[in-house]
Image 1 (cartoon, helix red, strand yellow):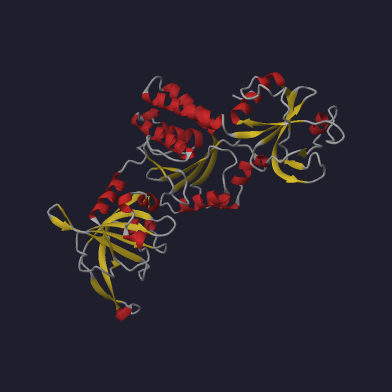
Image 2 (image 1 turned 180 degrees about the horizontal axis):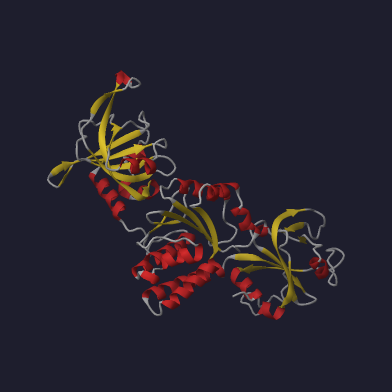
Amino acid sequence: MARDGAFSLAGGDVIQERGQRMNYWLFQANDEYPLTVEIPKRLGKGDYWLAQRYRDKLKEGDKVVFWQSGPSAGIYGLGELTGTPYESPNKDAKNGVEWRIDIGYSRLFDHPIFATELRRHPDLTKLPVFKQPYAANPFPIQVAEWKVIQRFINKKSVNIFSHYKQQEDQFTNGLMSILDLSQCHGGDRSLVHRFLKDVFGISLGQDRCRVRVLRDIEGTADAEIWDNTHCIRIETKIRSGTLRNEQLRDHLKRLKESPARRKALLLITPDDHKSDYISRIMAKPYVQKFVDGSSDHRIEHVEWRVIYKYLEDFAKELELSPTSLLIQQFLEQIYDCIFEQDFAGVIQKISFGDISEVYADQYIKEMRNDEWDRWNTPRKYEKLDGTGRKLLLYDNSLQAITAEAEIQKVYKANESRAFPWTNIFVPKSLQVYETPVPVARVIAIPGFENFKSGRSANWNVTREQYRLLRGVQ
């Protein structure tokens, strides 16, 4: 156990509790002493920490919170002092001795209270651990601060009325709130247990699990579900093509720090699960290292479309009830803000002729013979560049959309002044429709009423519009 400078003790005012004068303290550990590992080893056993200042105020029975420093800084557990400060020989310490205090651990939190949460409370902005994080122990904590910390410890994990500035956080909170509230039904009507098993293949125990939204916590995911053996982190996106490698790497790093035996990272996005974009993410070395590190480690991706259908079916089972009505309202939000807003691709009207080198009587046959691996366009479609989105081709001679492909890369080739941008297809993603999508179906879709007569050579397509074009249910 690291002792020299590894810990800081924070002490505070005295209040009356159960007939005795009580002080409250905060012990800080650095990364060399991970509390999620060390506290479980010492529950019910004695331990000591360094006490470098305020030794005249430290006394047996004083209450303690334990603070972990570093990227995931926060309060991780509770305990109390079991003695008073005393000297102990240490040849490496000044004057050959160091001051220690005996402590006892009473609890390791299922989930820490992160520093980012605590900083947002106006009564905790002056916490000594924030103002002087590297000073010698101890730091005083005021009674009012202790009371606020206790409220953080006791507060409910998720609240459907929570407000978030980011729209993405609103969807995370909505999903987590519905999952948590459904546990009130119990049995087969507990959505959270069925949801995890049916959608992700994760079987929780029969006891009530705990659900939490992780807002503004650096390096971790958006939400968490956990029980006695599982720690399940959830990352949600409401726009396709927005999963970032460095973000997922941090999520998996933080997830590894959890003391839970079974760990999973669940990704919920609008992206096509079969897209090259998602496949490349799931094949990243850091993902494979996490999964291969243990049979109890998992990372899964699912589309919002799957979540939508599952919640819709579950609500029908409940018939008319507050929970079913709540789910229906959430589904409306998913439809309006994700399916009808998220960008799915571009419809490009084909220009035939010698300049484009595309000929109406040849290109379909050539595509079916795998002679096309790219498509040149007059402008750059940056959002198609390796994001799993699609380029759809409209043939004006047939008055129909005839083919589509996922774009792997977009770059400027300067091969043609009229069509300087090259869109490389993801291998095997080019699909020539057996039955072309007629223009009548296109203009029947909201937002495409002027497609046939419009002069624009390209039209953006949302998720919902693409679904209607292809007749996907």
